[in-house]
Length: 527
Image 1: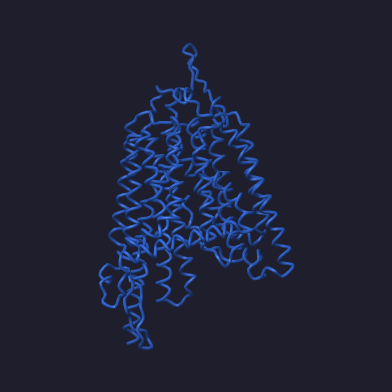
Image 2: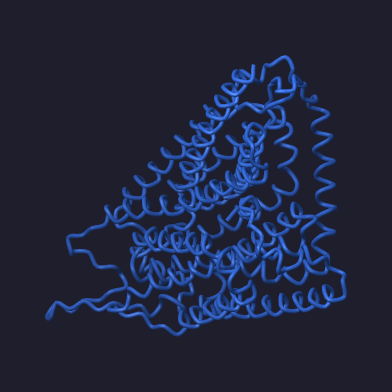
């Protein structure tokens, strides 16, 4: 009997692991094209800021959809259908880029924002379930498997940023005219001496998205051959479809909580065990789901409760003090995705280099984020935050005063590398801060974390065309200083309360810095 059950458990675990790997493969195939398309928007749809406006609408819609609609849709239609519907919206956004007009791209931005809210929510749910259910069959504690499978999801998303942008770089660079006959519109030639001099006066910090200047230098922002862009979009659609098909084949239908079968444990008692297979959904021992009317009622009640709890949390003392730093991080991310890729990469190096520079950023970002946990244990959180602040202020200041020349274009790659290092720090440290400050309400705390970051991203995208890059940099420097200052105030208040015994040392900053950073919380970001 025990031998039979051991074999059964081993078979279930093997099947579950297989499905988890295929699930992550689908995540990689779905995310890679989309993240590559996002960082290209400020360049390929630079005229009128159309690309950035579409992204602003996408992220704004994502915030509202996550708060108001997600729970109802997932409860009403099930996790798998919600996920597939969300992934299909990526394809809609790709199709809109075939004909990028305001009446196609802006509605597509709203649609993909709703879809992205669904996909991120369900991806986290599946990652959690894989870890929890395998833990039921194996000996280790549940949180170890949850962290393990959530960590794999985070690593897959980081890999998708690298892979997607390298695919973009390969296609756009391969489609570039390398014959030497082409000169971008921001260059001038003297036929008598056959000399080429590049004019980067309106690149970098001086990029104000002037309509006339943008029109004259359009070849720097768009591929020389429009067919290259069509090929890129087609490849992105194909890769996304492969990911969607993978998920449709291996993920079970219905509610995640209902994916169980009845097994007999060694004590002879029956217990429910999650098995991710379609035929088990028809198991006679499975509890029937509530009807549609009851689901809708429960969903609406859940939305109201979530809004009430979220509002109460965002008005709390410590959340108010760290909110400016959280919003500032959203501005920082969108600056890299929308401004740095256009004003520095496309304007100076050409649009075909956008994918390569962002791949450098993502690789360094991921490496630093992985190493950050051990560095914090050695030096403490606040010292690491101070280092990131000083480095970002230095790089932002350099970006303002740097005058690019033809022989210094390589500096663009260095800028992305430096920002990748600090982004890995900020992302990780914000997670540690929220874990430390709100140990008893982390679910709602990380919802607020995600909301404020997304609001920062949205605002940056929406006002992008209104002011010059150097003004945006000054705003970011001011926000970083304000955010870190208020965070310092929060740390000072917590120190006083800890000394007074109002904060349990077991959940204080020192203990939480040494604690394993839960990758699950990282998954709640839609960035």
